[in-house]
Length: 299
Image (cartoon, rainbow, N blue to C red):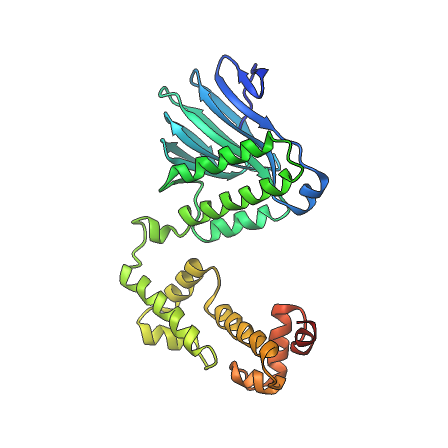
């Protein structure tokens, strides 16, 4: 959260001040956690006593909080958002942010966390339609996870860095599930439900015909969707391009055949849709970082 001035610790993580009452745990992860895990920095709950504004920037941290009572506003990247109970906020604290309680004094549950992969995860979150502010369909799922993180952070478990990593991963998974793909969650997109149904049909077609020559032009014509919409919406829905989806299907099938058949590399290449075995080997190595032959020996 942003800085709260003149807040004094009472006991067991409880703080009181002229602006807020809070229960928080400031956490110091192990060096192992900092290098290898998504790790906790701070977790807590606060209730405003008076209207106030908190500000912070240039902090190597990601902040997630959910409003459980009252209301307020958030300023981030030149945008201002009004938030109500059930609204969630997820932002990169390297950017300046400000949050303000309204006269309807709010209660928040929050977690500050970081990790070596968090910048990439947040970029993926934004790429797939994730917003700074979104409404949680089931707020209890989110608040329960934050409570569990808080309990673990205060525990004496020698595995708590790993346990916190697991809970933060669960939080991120739920954030992704509940917020991404604004074209499916909002009324902002003209992409119809019928066309979204076509996306599922396209994916199923690819899975059944991955070893054939499937091109974007063909799929666009077959399902009556422009190439732009098809390319854009497929990636937003499934997290990868049409072409990469096909390649991954082929490589997955190839790995199965390499492990559980006596087919040659050339035969496997042909089975999964590659006429040129050398191109198959290059594609396989690009995905797996080893050749098909090396994969077969290792597995």
